[in-house]
Image: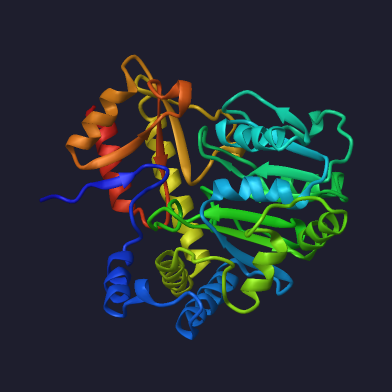
Length: 361
């Protein structure tokens, strides 16, 4: 039976080494060990070491594990803001981050631009400096990526704010300078090519101090997954609760595989594959058009195109017949667009096959 390749923007194709790592985990009974055992502490320590190497993470940044990236939205607002948050909104997921802040009764402001567009920092509205500045590096719903230079410029414009970056559908592709941000988070079912069910939250001492300040004022910052509780546990290579132990194990193994390959090579391959997809979409202007018009704001990891003259579902079905699954548009754009994931697990050969399908359809 032919293998079906998933180019969906998460969950997506498993990283090619994952099946082997799962077999090893089952053989070693990883799923049954105690989360308070030395064996599990060694697994956590290995995963942390590999992630630190992959991200070139400064020593004063902590890494914690959550149930999902969605959870990090809520925990961030609880732990890193008392009253004010500012959100850059250009798609469904950045909008949900803003909505969480409103639901948690913060004075949330947003700078919102139309779908498919990035932000022009020369036109930023006049905002008072917030406690928390929330930026989505890669908007999964629209395929818009924010240039890292713009993120760093916002850091200078709001130096007193804690700056958190949602890198759910891009990490570890962007070469983030962590000294320019305070926190970053992602989930593993996208670029890391792992089964869903694990979020990773990176934060520095400024974030931890803010949470401790709120606690000292008698403010609620949540329960078992507060920044102080997460930081205290991870110092012992533990977690506050019984976590997704298999997910943490697999993440460490895949991060090790990526380090062995080299993050520079992975980034170059991602750029090369993205160029193939964008070029071939533009070769067929009667069938497709690029949703993100400004090349500087086009994502390398989630590529979004309008499907012209025919329903997007027709192209998706055609690809499925040839054992390639691409994503549909998000929300109201579901029937008009396709979203193509370009993650480290996706080979150049699959994109060449997809290019042939674009021509044949």
